[in-house]
Amino acid sequence: MSTKLTILAELRKVADEQAKSLAPLSDDLVLLDSGLDSLCFAVLVARLEDRLGVDPFTASDDVAFPVTLGDFVKVYEHAAR
Amino acid sequence: MPPGDVGSLRDCLGDTADRSTRHLHGIDASVALSDLARGTSLGGRLPELRDRSVLIATGDQLTTALALIELDGVARRLILCPPDVAPEHLPSVIADAGVDALVSATVDQSRVTGVALAVTCGPVLAPRTQDRGAPRQTEWVMFTSGTTGAPKMVQHSLAGLTAAIKRNASQDGPVVWGTFYDIRRYGGLQIFFRALLDGGSLILSSPKEPIGNHLVRLGAHGATHVSGTPSHWRRALMSPSVQAMSPRYVRLSGEIADQAILDHLRACYPRARVGHAYASTEAGVGFEVDDGLAGFPAGMIGRLPSGVEMKVEDGTLRIRSNRTAVRYVGDGAALADDDGFVDTGDIVERRGDRYFFVGRSNGVINVGGLKVHPEEVEAVINGHPDVRMSLVRPRKSPITGSLVVADVVLRGEAADARLAQLQGEILRRCREALTQHKVPTAIRFVPALAVAATGKLARHHA
Image (cartoon, rainbow over all chains, first blue to last red; front, top):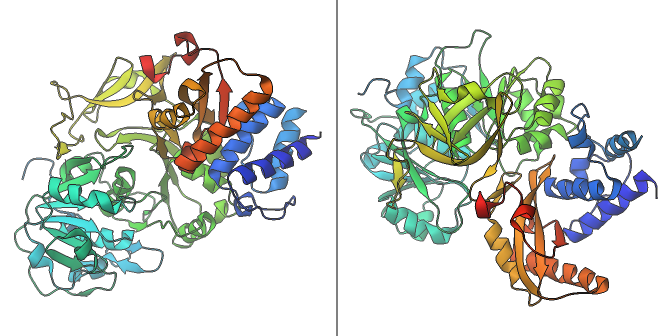
């Protein structure tokens, strides 16, 4: 599964577990408008670390904080390279 | 008045330059400090509150701020009620703090609390006609964070609360403070005092305001100094509106500031000085770190030029200074040891020439500013018939600082298929019994909870 598909699958799973209704997912969706709160993102980043073996936000200090879903995916794609 | 005393809050306003340009900005209303100097938010009932023990429970922060400015130096005691105190705890608060007057947004609240004298406070000022009378010392009572059950209160003096604030007017123009905190908590109250004593203005937060709007409002009012927890700041950095403001000073406190968040903020606001401060409701403001690095220099242990003394004992940071609280209100527990040192409960670890904060000695986990007592979560997990024991511990998170995870020992062997089922059952149990941030984000089955496996930070032997 591609990094992006893994992220989207985990994101939907977290939203489901935390009983959040998700906005339609697109690259320019602002994360804070996605329906997920900080806790959901924290859980998502932890799950992705377990799945992908990387937490780009901790591993590298020069990663910019993602604003959109597209930014978020790019951070992981970049880290996987 | 003892040396170093600041008098009353209103005197501080009088000391500073032009008041007409200074404001308290709430989400719905703004009040000019010059208007407050001549007016009252208490509808002419200030004299009735003289020498009383006054519970401030106004709902919003702007009216709290107005009441505090008016009542300091008039009331015997001010009790700052945070918005999240459960109504069932108010009777013990009222009894323990000897409350005999209430300041609230609506009179109805007096019926709930049973306090005889109730005064309403609002952001529309009336001309003040009565004299304030001779100023007196007012005790400030705050709620500590991180407790379960009945809230714990500590008593401070205005002198102690403001001792860390240097009152030299800014060289770079007017100071406009903004904070993501609520001013009824220690971190926010510090910023309220800073704004008043720096000769500046203050932009207050509101729980009903989305972060993006808040950032835009901070920018619109020209915020120059902005404070919040690392979790507050991480949220701000995820907002498209993060550049709506351009502060000169970015301040973090209340949680461990890691290197990543400090670096992110420096990159986001290249013009700003980024610093982190250490304070607690009991120990007061300990110190500020302005070198852009996480942790604090080991050389700070000992006596600082500010007069604050720090030592590390049994792994936790201890502080003695004139900024610590006076006492706990309502219970006999000692706040400080015989030498006057307050145990902050924060475990520090020395690496090279710096100390780093690594957790709490009581095992409390901080999830984005919300406290989790591991024992509470473990009790829920252990209620499952197949569970022998469990250990709830933090997992580091770059978003919320920490997350909750659980190591679980089962009563007997279980096949893999059954393990997946058990995981689901335990999580369901937790979701039913606990608020969202307390639910473990991962359940790991372990054969035993050996001491070595719990690691250095495990509360059982911390």
